[in-house]
Image (cartoon, rainbow, N blue to C red; front, side):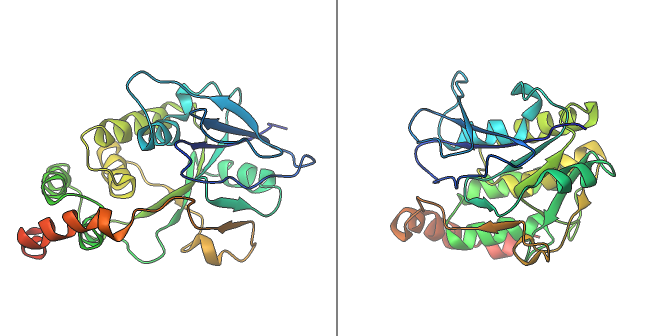
Length: 242
């Protein structure tokens, strides 16, 4: 039986990862930047990539598992605020026997353009970046309502060549500076002519209760988001986003 790896990546204290039980069937690997404590049950690995720090280090690990030397062929990535309530091994094996990539749908949106609009409204991104990426999405042929994955839980056969190409495309889009990985994943899937197997419509309401979510240890304050919100309103973002 293939042993699965569950992994996460936390930098600059953004999350406090929950411990896992030693009798579970998976290996649990926590990549980090040396600023966080490794909880019980996780194997800590310091991740150092030239020029990649903070949130970008997390996205590097999230998007490029084939570069991480995970020593197995199938993995589950989880954000640092995801709590594993029971052994995820059987679920990983079952899902990845059917598809090389599986994930949960976004619980409230099914459109990358709507995700940009919401990120602008909340002040998570700058309007010029959103404008650039809306144009990029249109150039790649990404239609509205093409689906949106909540990219906090990702099941992958990460050494599959198609999954490697998807991850590299996702990372290239991330490096352009938008700062929101979920709409970029929709664009990367479109560019590769791929779809993901949808595990469920809402990870938080999954009937097996294997996963739950807690608040991030660090959140952006309203004051931090206010300049982006004001800039978006001044640029009349509701008029030019499709």
